[in-house]
Length: 394
Image (cartoon, rainbow, N blue to C red; front, side, top):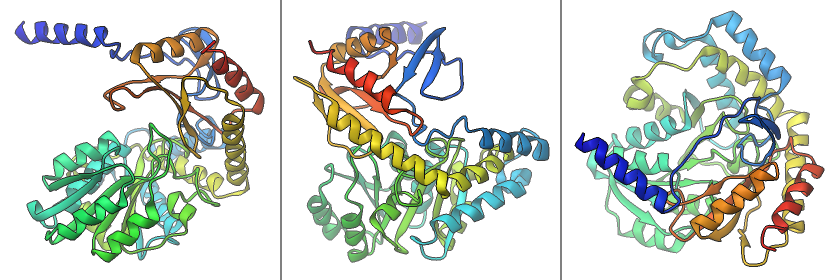
């Protein structure tokens, strides 16, 4: 009972600080207009950036995949769970990212979280505790946890501070150096200075690990993500993209030089010791990739950019601040936890689902509303939200 008593006390502390997290129940497919706990809502909170999560062609492909392969994979990838569907998907993903990677190969994971754990722990295993890992201070929790799991020498560099990273790299004598960063910072929406980071890595013979969870599919002329956005190519890059956001399905992948991927297959514990994702998901993702790199994908990315411009043009804030971002993640900085919760609650009462993001997800004193846009939103949908937000500070 001592543990339970302590848990109850800590939950009360979360309540006092307006930090307890609660879940709502979505009762319809992911889309701008959803049913939530029996209430019709206009949602601006999903990461379905291209609006593919309920695409009829992808749904049909998932059903076809279940007919072909069943539901569960039945084992880990290294036993009997690696299906032809998984193999074809990995080949397609490697081909898709090949303009930006040398001798590319790809590896499919159940989640982006697992992919990041696998990459950092797997790469660090090459040199063990002599590996030096340089992590951006605003990196996603999965990268932070992966860094801890790696047991590497960890240094954290300030947000976007290339000069500070240069000093750290220059001072390091580690045989293996790994710089790791988000591409699009999930709570801020801004882009990391990837070209400058890559130049540093090449100068100091370091690897650059990029978590492009919020860029894959949404950035670049063909949806290849941040590497296409910046027109980069290098053998020093290890690239992670998620398949449950812009791709609209589930899972993630790591793409890199073929020997790096072979090492991860043999040494990355989060890949080795888990049951493989359902092969039907991999089959559905082939259709998703077709859409992303086709005419429809181009049109959806163009619509998303138009919505981003509309929001930034028409939002009129007083005390609050629209944070700088050219991506689908558009946060409004409020600061106070309780005020952020109240703003989200007021919008919810008006039929708009926009979450309040509070510490520890963001630093203390930076609570915010986090608006996320989808290509499935209409200009009218967004205009209604803008009018509601503009009235919150009256």
